[in-house]
Length: 142
Image (cartoon, rainbow, N blue to C red; front, side, top):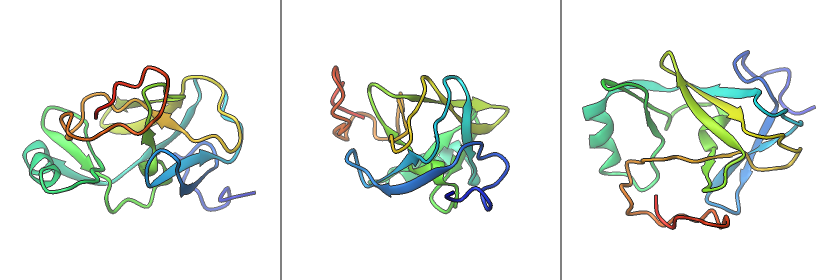
């Protein structure tokens, strides 16, 4: 049954973290996630935008999300599995910032074993990182 007994209440669907064909580790559905349903959230250290950009300038693997014009969340020390959500130019999920929270929703039904992906949009990589999603119409850079 996966991590159902120990997952936090904001993690709505059971997921697993394992090696991803896209990059590093990824998060995979351990149960079917219906279209438009909230999959879960990710929480981390609240920092200023200036600090986020300072940290991002020194890292290859960035796990920082800007949630407002003043605040960002650094997910590097988070224990939430959704922090491993990889980018895809043809994602099956969507990241939304709602009241300062980083939430993930299914854009379509996601099957058991399928990697959950989102389109990162603008990133701290500023186009310097090659996209590895392999999706049709991939834009090539993050």
